[in-house]
Image (cartoon, rainbow, N blue to C red; front, top):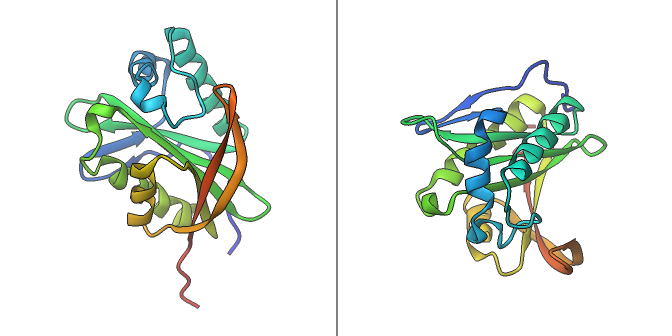
Length: 185
């Protein structure tokens, strides 16, 4: 089975509590609120936002990534109030039929199972609809909550990537995790 990275339109996903949908400029205030929180950006490769224009530019970059076929990022929205509280998505590696997953969530919603619920939905989409063979995740070594999240979803520790990322003025070691699609053959 080869991976189908061409999506004719942005797919909406639904879980028990969440809608996963395309971010729009109307979400800029919520995206700004998310990324202006130092707790959220502590382990992120983005600096903490200080201007709403940064949120608008991020939404534009994510839209272009989808339109170019290089990845997809869903806004995570609570069904009960339609408020955007985070995002999750993939950057595709078409040669290996795989993807790297990324995610963040507003700190007031941590430890409620929201990201587990959202990631289960996009992993199912990635494996069943896109046909991914495996998904990787790179996590800063001190990000214990993210490591636990990935392990709870079935990801396995793969290795430590020394000085793999450079942001916020310094190099960072990342722990790499992998989730391989279950095969039935």
